[in-house]
Each structure stands twice: as C-alpha cells, then as structure tokens.
Amino acid sequence: MIPFNKPVLTGKELLYIGEAVASGKISGDGIFTKRCHQIFEDLLQSKKCLLTTSCTDALELCALLLNIKEGDEVIMPSYTFVSTANAFVLRGAKIVFADSGSQNPNMDVDTIEPLVNEKTKAIVAVHYAGVACDMDKLLALTQKHKLYLIEDAAQAIDSYCINSAGEKKALGSIGHLATFSFHETKNIQCGEGGLLAINDEQFISRAEIMREKGTNRSSFFRGEVNKYGWVDIGSSFLPSEVVAAFLFAQLENLEKIQNKRKELWNVYYDRLSILEKENKIKLPFIPEWATNNAHMFYVICNSIEERTQLIDYLRSKNILSVFHYLSLHESPYYQPKYEGKKLPWSNYYTDRLLRLPLYFELTVEEVNMISNYILEFFK
Ligand SMILES: *Cc1c(COP(=O)(O)O)cnc(C)c1O
Image (cartoon, rainbow, N blue to C red; front, side):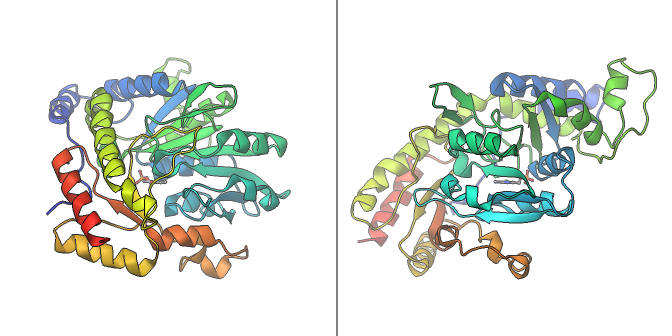
C-alpha cells in the first residue's frame, strides 16, 4: 500500500529529544526552542519568530494581537482549512469569504476590494500548496485601506515570491504576521507544532506575553524585570523542549528534504503533462512571481464523478489519493450564517482537486508507477 503521507524522520530526533530531557529543562523556550527561533529568523528575515503548539494556535495569537472583536470583518479564502477561519470566529469576527482564482486555489485578489468596508480589519492570505498569492496586489490593497495582512503560510515553508522590484522574499515574511504548521502532513514536521513570524515590530512584546499565558515571563528570564506577573490576556501557546528538539532535527535537514520532494514533484509533473495537453486533467499552476516548495502534488479532474472514479481506481492499485478542502462558506457551521455571493471557483476545487502521495520516503520508481496508473485510467 502506498499511503498518501508518511511523516518524514531524519534519524536525529530521538538524539536531540534525549539531550532536551537530560538538560533538565523540558518546558518551553529552552536551548532547542532558541535554536529553532534563530534558524527561522535567518530563513525568513523576520523580526521575531516564536514556536507555537500548532499553526491553529499561531492563528489564534494573530487574532488576539489584532484585537479582533465582535463586529469586525476578516477576509480570507473559502477554500482553506477550518483553523484559518476559526481563529477569528473565536474572537467574534464575521468571516467574509473570497473566491479562488481560475488558475489555482489561491484567492483571486481582483475580487477582494468590493468585499472591503469600514468593518474590515484584516485579510488572511493562504498560500495554497506553498504557492504564493499575488502579494504585490494584496500589499497595495491592504495599504490603501489600512488593513492588516496575515499570511497563513502553513504549507509554505521554503517558498518565495518575487515582488515587482525583483526582490525575492520568503513567504511568511511579507504580512504583518504569518503562521506556519509543522503538523505531520507538512514538509517538515514535529507531529503537532507551529510558528508565529512577526514582521511588524509593534507586535513583538505583546506576542511574547500572550504566548506565555499573559505574563511577562520572557522579559523576566532576560533579566529585564525582577518579577513576573499577569500583564495582559493570553494562553499557553509555547511547545515543550521535546517538541522543539524534534523540530530542530528536521530543520537541520530542510534542504535535503526539500530537494527530494521537488525531485518527486517534477517527475509527477513531467509524466502527467501529456494529460493536461489532452484536456483530461489540469496540473498545478505556479505564477511567474511564485516558487514551488513541493508541498503538494495535485491534479484537477474534469468532474467530481471522474475524481471519485480515479480515487477508487488508484485504491484498487493500493495507492491512496485524497481530495482536500470543502468550501467553508458551504460548511455545516458557516453556511447558515453566510450572506455573501456564490463562490464557484472554491466549489470547483472542492469537487475536482485530487492530491497524490508525496513524502520524503516515496521513491522515483513509485511516482512513475503511480503516474503510469493514472495514464492508464485516462486511456
Ligand atoms: C495545516 C494547516 C493549518 C493547521 O495547522 P496545524 O498546525 O495543524 O494547526 C492551517 N492552515 C492551513 C492552510 C494548513 O494547511
């Protein structure tokens, strides 16, 4: 059986966890957390990076930091994971869903401006499959209307966008705040884990406090205050050193992991491109401003029926392929509250997008075999 995903392991995880345990400091913000923070700050050129217990938690921190409250509106794609929306719903915000584009599942930025009004506080850009949204246009829009820009970069580690000035910027380094996920389904993982990247300095000290239960414990440990106490609202958002040690082992191998994923991605793309030419499927589209971090390889079928048949066919060959998000504006939770327009492109990806196995241990031979079966299916 070829699974859809197999979490990557580098071999050093248990060694570093052992070191964390032996150090006697197993709660958060110890030596491994600091090492991870440094690597991320270098990688992203971000003002401050803070490990969190998940990307979901990092998104909740964003909503707290922006003081999102009842009556506020937040714009985001409907084709995304529930956590993107839940974080803001928990603070009482109304979610205004934008449609995906025709070329890939990212938000169609040209449809966003009519959704902005005096209640709008923020736009959340989700870089689907690690492919950059049109950040030049989004930045122009958020600057014009004085909105916060948040990047849900859960899938976007080691991915970049090239702006109109020709500068290459890491995804997660552009919005005021950005979040990453290290869930076991992501390119680098620690089971459950996340990161908040802060690109606007005004949020740094409050983020440290909110992540530490609303206390100024971080400044206390830096010797800036002589006792720590309750100074703001907050919760427990920091992971233990056991988790940070695991993640550090993965970060050391980021390049190796990424090279393998990209190699496999390219084999899929080359082998299946004939089907795109024959209009049997569509392949991932990467705009000229974006790079590919090989987070995901998907195909877009011509109908939901054909997708179901392809899933069943691959399963009969012991290969697991899976569809992805169900439009949030039509979800059982949000549909009764949803007042916006129809979002046909979001529903298009809901019905037709199919993700193929892609993980570090997968081999080129296996990708060739999977591709052969898909070619055979369409014959
Ligand atoms: C994985 C993912 C999340 C959630 O990440 P967790 O670390 O599991 O909380 C949020 N948004 C997107 C776009 C994701 O892909």
